[in-house]
Image (cartoon, rainbow, N blue to C red):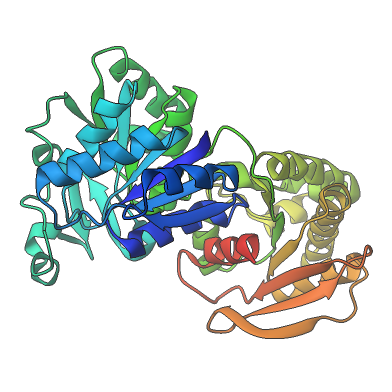
Length: 415
């Protein structure tokens, strides 16, 4: 049995969604349904995630339904992920119904948003570049466009109930969203359309779905990046991130990360006892690394209103001492996590902090690979104490857009 079966209606959708599992270390293979069922099912001996392109975007509805049904029938999997186009082109409803008809799922979680590419859902309406998809003429001119921007309406002819989980609930977090999904799943099998405006919302949806035992998802590559499978991947890249910059752009980027990746310094503790605070923070980061293979240690929580310099002044420290003590806490935390988890990738933002981290890890020389994650954000490498190659990405605090830190971490995870 596969850990996950991903069913896409075209090849590019198959590869970009499969990539979301491959970057987390799952062996992932992409094939076309034009192969025989025996050939496809035999791939299960050498892969954890199977991605099948049914090439059904422009097919007749019944043909698309049969294609998805056939793949599910020949490829048993713990999780079914029906990849749909992030602008809702194709045979969305018949392919979703095939998933419910062929599985025992009580609920299919539907979240086609891909915020990194400006595809979001709010009020049940799907927007592209801030426009409803039916008003975006360049998208409507493409093959098999949707007839409405309102997803519940698009699905209204389903044989199954359709419900909508609004952004207000999802914004409350995984507990509130899980409670809503749990209430829905006590009824007949249901299509649950979820709003999402950010990567954090997609992470909340995936986390909540996992908590209520959902095993069927519908989304673009955006949601796939957050769906956790039942077993850990056989190969995993571990990434440690350290965010010392307090630049507003960096704080915005930090807000886009899943909550369970990030551990924040207790600033008061860091100022009064930096080494002890660092060790405690590093131990929390170790637990994040164990659960998701990514741990980010940050000096400032962007949701808090604490001024480190004012707090330091109250404790009797000038600005230079505040910077020094927070730097000591951050580097101690990074070293603590580094020694116990042996990351294969390191990310640091804030030039001073990046230098301090490398010094603390006794790294005096790095080699530039010639690659960049984004313009001005280079990829380097160095050898750790075991003579294993570790990839390094450093970023100036003011560089990038809202998704840049997430992009840097994902790049290190898949290298």
